[in-house]
Image (tube, rainbow, N blue to C red):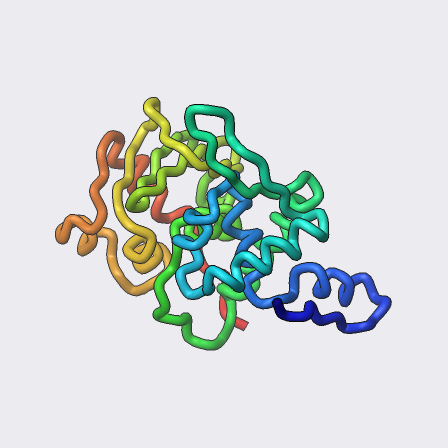
Length: 218
């Protein structure tokens, strides 16, 4: 097992980095912000992290009081990891970091993105002005992952799970949605190729794709 490093600096910022600054630690937090996950789910969301490193980071986050684990009741009986109340306070930091990085003058990476990453980006890049007067609920299917997105009163809520009462359902995958919202691919092109399939209120769905502008580059 590796030795956890410390900056040896009494500043609270340095202490925060001691807690979540190790490689993969903050991305584990990202993967848990929308709810508990099994180890296999975490590995699916972080495919480039080795099982040993992922296990080590989870142990460190548990020891720090950021993550806890428990066993679901029968018939599931699976062990899951979730954020503690204190750990969930990292949401504003993680979402703000993503918003800040999206305005980088460097070109965006062409690396694949995960479903939770895109879902959290919806929170971080949501523009209340673009949503003026909109009240709608969406079910967003990103491969095997489903999310409920509620927009009302200039605010957005994103949660894991489906929504049978959605005004519009959007079926796609994380990389396609990323390319349409923040890349150079048009919604029309993605729909023609069936990369995005919309059911329900078409106008509400089209409005959805205009709610998340990228901040101006530095």
